[in-house]
Image (cartoon, rainbow, N blue to C red; front, side, top):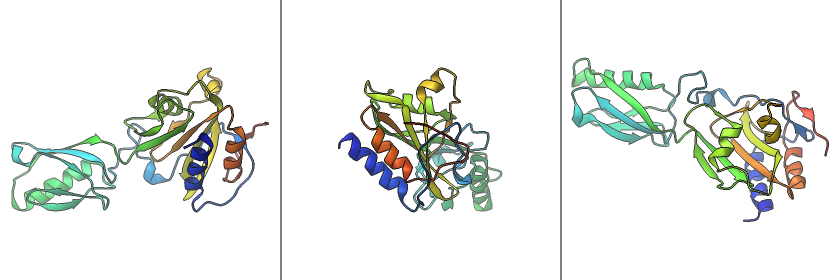
Length: 229
């Protein structure tokens, strides 16, 4: 797939259900996503389990109950003795308490349950465009834009560091903002936090018109200042 086609494909995905908006602007900050996405690891809120997360579960002095389970698309996990139990949307402590309560009801006295997230599958960021290794990467802690780009082994030689677009869902709408990696590296601009389900597209020197078309179709935020082409 060509660079232009790749950008257009991301644009079509991002534009689903969104209204058309204003012109091209350069972000000085980016609003956080919807509340459900705020519980990323290390963001100041306790992490809430999501569909497809991989969990390691153990019960003190009951090694036969220890196992690694994946949260299914419906947000459920399955445990021996107690069957299916809701997991998505719960914190680790809440899920531990739910499992302990189910086990103590019939099988164990005061069970001590430990739940650890092995893979944060529900918290992923998509890196595309002029990066060395485009793909979908898990977020395992507070992640900034520079750190996210580094996951993809950094921009290519053809990258335009001032043309980095972040797509995000805010208040139920798909929105986009553009950032300048060079300014961030120099300390002239803040390094914004990246959240699960964000899409980060690094532009190339030959794709400025494509990025302008994409941003011209998306809502923008009043906190941005205009960027002159």
